[in-house]
Image 1 (tube, rainbow, N blue to C red):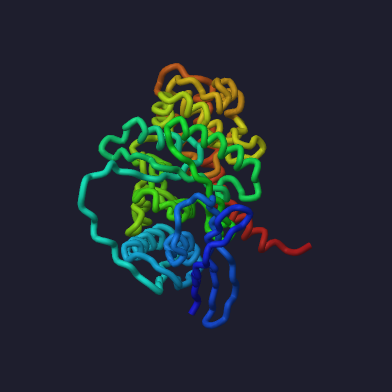
Image 2: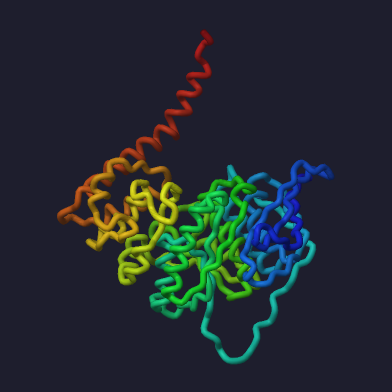
Length: 400
């Protein structure tokens, strides 16, 4: 029997951070095939934590176990609610991506029942949130601060910024600069920002576009003492959902446990909708960081696909391009022909921008979107059909 065993470890101090870790063992029968430490580093003033609580480690490793076809054995405490939800979460991935994931069993040392709800005066609903400084995250905090979510509005008590996802753990200068900008952004709304660093992406090699939902929730679990709800900013809107995808309104709620409810937030809005509404908060719009590159720590490169696409999200509404993205549309017009789409999600975003353009006068960048999409579709056909045929043909070629 092949097993992925998770063994939570006591906290320790590492370079001024409080490290909460879990030993991840691959077992084939009684033989240990490999052992790694999955760790999450938190600042010393982070909320207290019971190291027997294994929920963040289970959430972090579920996709890995499903990908490798290993049963999960958890040497810690997990709520029954989370176990029930993860069964459905696993069913989603085994159904939508059966070539990559399969259902697995989960064995837990201690299963706890949810506590009965307390009675008393109704308190304003509170939440924590993941915050990268990007468009989706900035819109999320602005939406709740300004009451744009209606009865769903939460008081965001704190946000968490993560090193080890889009910013590698060893890019210290990049993370520190980004953290400083993000702290200033949230301070203007009266919100606190906590840092967290983790090696999760180094331990878990599942493709990031399918892993990022569980990864974010695993990190937010360590701050659940602050508020009972965690908000994940939406990626795609309801009418352009990409399936399967690592974070969506279809599955994010299935990462909820008895102690932390997960809410996928803002899917009624496209990225261009978010840009239009975020423009009402110029201070926040002028400080967004959407770029994955590290050549300009804390800022944007202004040349990659995501930078240019975010410029377009503002420009399509005839809004000023934020200062953090160059401040005008000229760079977008100059660089649009260099864009190369790499995923279905990126193509969906540019297709939505094309539809928003309408039939009136267009800027140069809008006239180039059709060509971008055609190039993407042609490459997709090549990769799906012609490349395998060419490889088979090359394999039959005589050796010279």
